[in-house]
Image (cartoon, rainbow, N blue to C red; front, side, top):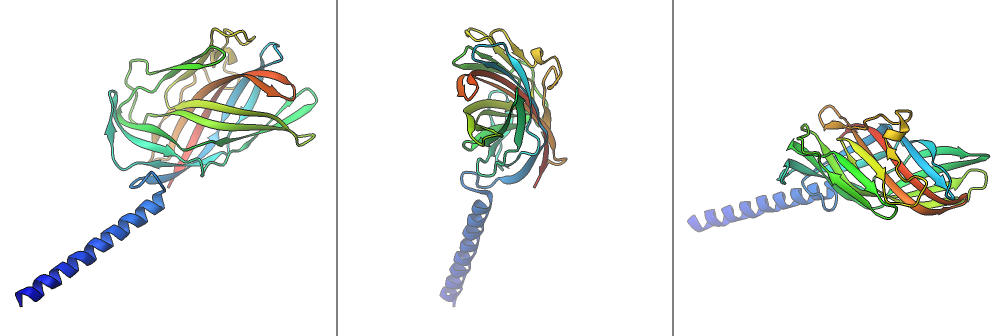
Length: 267
């Protein structure tokens, strides 16, 4: 009688274990590869003002207004908190597969251009619940960007930094449908402040600073995001980048960019 009871107990234990494992597998599949145990959020950029200073064939910088509002993407917030030297955070993965970029339209002379941006690969950031110092100041020397993260002051809970977001930027000529420019952009997006200075280059953009030299016309000065509040579904990210020596239909171009994303977040 005792043996039968033990056998029955083992059977129930095995069934329970199988159910737990199956449930865990289902959760992992739902969240996505590399982000097991996290929560997936749908994000829309509701406001996406940006300014690009462009030097064409060695000419002076021309400001071009862009708008990345309407872009949607998915981010996965991990269920386990971690710590670093600045504070406690949850890893956040922005998924390349879920990125749907909006189209920006610009004009140069008689030509009209359409630009669409896609995220090249998944990227991981840090969403801080305490501590965290996410202000970013970058200097570009014409070839490489050197970024300093942090200003020595603790930022509020909900601060998010996503380093090295890599985008493919494709610009086509509206009149012909031909590709004008293919460009890879690398940005660190943050809820703190973001600045970019060109120093050490031979470009006509040498000495330029964004957002300072925009003068508040297209993006705010200072350019600062807003903490992420997952319950309220709000937050804002800002970022900069520079790429020099790009080949386009209008000639060799140097560009520097500053942009702000106001976010709407939902499950």
